Amino acid sequence: MTRRGRLAEAGHQARLPSSEPRPHSGPVRTCVGCRAPGSRSALLRVVVVQDLLVVDVARSMPGRGAWLHPDPGCLELATRRRAFGRALRHAGPFDTAVIAEHLESQMHHDAG
Image 1 (cartoon, rainbow, N blue to C red):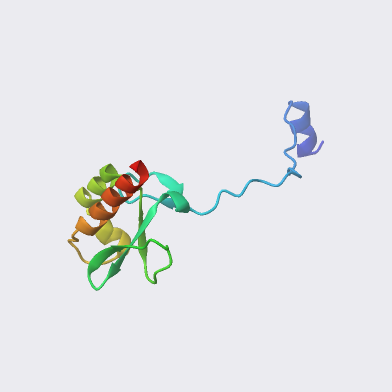
Image 2 (tube, rainbow, N blue to C red):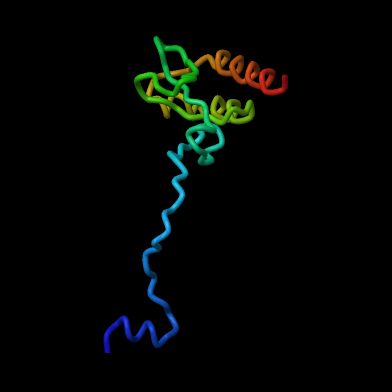
């Protein structure tokens, strides 16, 4: 008896590929603050430009990027864990004031 036959006798069903297309969820990135996965569109991309952290609004600047939820708590966690230096492979420490200002302006923009 074949292996397939034994599995069928045991009540296992063969797993056939679905003919339905699977929904494409897009690229998934990990937040450097909370380490939770998120879609690329839901996270901010941060890059280093001349030893300064810059928010890459268009998500298209050259170089290595770090991804962060647009949440002050995630920014605080990333700063406390020194995650920007590791993710960007660049010596820190970094001034995160530009990112904090960006988050604050986004919060005011969304509220208004």
